[in-house]
Length: 329
Image (tube, rainbow, N blue to C red; front, side):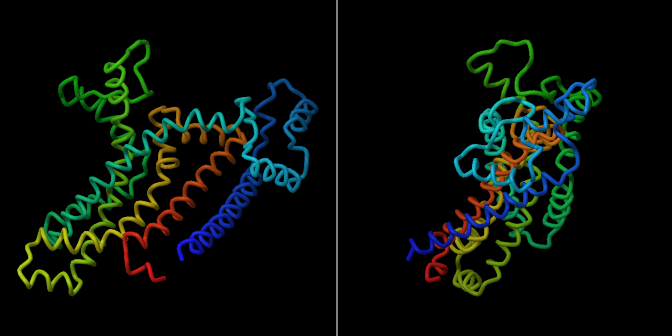
């Protein structure tokens, strides 16, 4: 029973992946701009630009380019970057650890903070604290990531000096490590952590705001069920009913949310990496878009699409495990 379900889900995932990457290819090719204009000197002639386009294979029809790209993709070849002059897979692999580190740290903190706040709000439904937390979470979740990042930079750099706070409150705003310092061991780790505080905080507070709103609704839906009220009527404490009844039955909804948030490890820090000058996938993608570096844009999009589809597939397969009611289907 599990094997046919797995094969069916894999077939749908493969078809969806093909549709997504095809759409991405078409949209990238329809975008205005000519990569050759970024690769030739200002004094180059039209013949020089046409020669570069021919070397890059851009003089062929879109159908031929698509067929060549899909054929190479099926073999695991993402092509070579126009601007960087290296294989796309290598460029992505060099940038991925930075994005993974930021994404994983923020994801864990997001669910720890957001889930806790959502549970706290559900236990205090319609009280002042719940209403204030709801307003704040909606405001933070609606705020653009780059705006939150710039606000944190302004406070923990200039704001610390203006308010007369201790110098230890000042946090580095750019880069992964302090320039000009050759640190090793724990000193190097501490320096890296200090540089990571602001970008991780930016991703965490925005993500936690959304998780808190979702978790609050999930917990409240379960708290209103008859079996929870019956347990309370039989004398079960609030903590026991929450642990034994509310949390297990709200878990499937949180698993789905976790799966939908999981691709953020790969694609959730595009603007944050740009603001804080972290050399991750997001910054690489933005630079590739600006330079019309089609292979890098397509390669990054393939990674992002695969991450989203895989996360949804894992959630679909995990639901019967956390929710026995779905095992029959």
